[in-house]
Length: 297
Length: 270
Image (cartoon, rainbow over all chains, first blue to last red; front, side):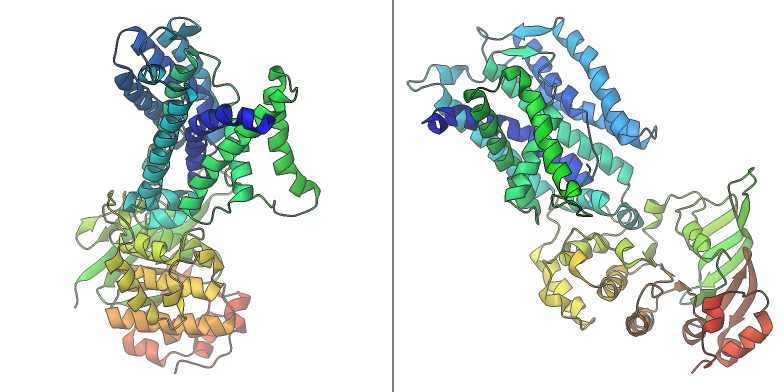
């Protein structure tokens, strides 16, 4: 019964945050670039969308602008790393920190309410069904499209060069690919997905908050670890599928935990422990290489 | 005389410039490579062999001197823009292929060497058909494993694949950097044989660095020996044909204090 009761929220959040997991899979797994921009680009998506909606811009245009903002933020992290030669982790942390101020500037305050504003969910609220039904269907469609587009892109000539950049940089440079540009573009794509998620989540929950990105990377990593434990990411299709499925299962575990008495305040700690356990247990067991081989970690 | 493919003028590369560890890896190298030349490069450890290839390929920019490919000055071109002219095979078999990607994807990456990569589908049906055909040349059964990850292949198979990849779209210049050194003797022999076949079939202009005197003598039409960043010897055509390993050792045993080189049995060139 408990399981059934958490199902709607699990699917709704799992699918909405699957876009973040996809983005993280793109950087950590495909590019082998541990990008921490995510904690800043997720609220950036929310901030841009919320501000524009409040200004009277059409919600779908606002989402498009949010995606573009996320893309630019990711590209900037890439530029910090490739042109200014700043360590990849630090480049992400710098960008995340800078985006905190940027997000406050964009919103003009710490949060924006969207409850009585028109959003892309407004027409669903007027339907004759429980709200979560169309919302889940909507997030399902968006996630499936994002996953499919990512899959297709990674099989194109340039997408393959991007994968090779994460796999063997020496080789793909010798084959004529400017890996700096590939890294910048890949980070842009990843953060565009993350900002899309931020823009949609903000409208779904009815507000955008400057703190809504905290812990997003760790949650995304947890999703990917869970997903890859179930689906071996031998191909691109399976890699992105693992991210989506992992995200849903992660949200299920979280919802169950909350239902069974986990304090919401302890949520991020619990997620952190999940990641530590998953990465740490193989090491403690004495395995030289972790069973869950997570590139970029 | 055939057209010139590669020209080096006074190329110098200094590592750790201005520190106590300063090292002149290359010291005023002048080299003209004619079209169709197959040049073997020998020298002891630290002679500058690999540095020479890296400078030509644009991985390192030279501190002094000029490099030209065809009529084009490429002294300052970075490695990825040199890919248009140059294909490379590295010593380490894992370096020439992307292990996590499939055989056909690796071939496709290589086919597009130096070309624009757009948003059209990578491994198309037509390409797959072609890859299946060209892989048959290797006689390793790889044509039936197109979708398998390259990391599943042995070192020798990976190196053979890399060689094949280098020739999918023909380069002006092929650089081989001790590409058989990390393989066991039998596999090395096979890959070495394959190299000869591929180079002669496609009339590729080739520079091959090797540690093995025999290999240096059996392959190619010209041999240069590097020592302390300079070209110490340059033998061509007939003169090279007549040269034997023992003569080489007699002549340069002093400078070639290198176990790998000296341990090579003096069988002479066939």
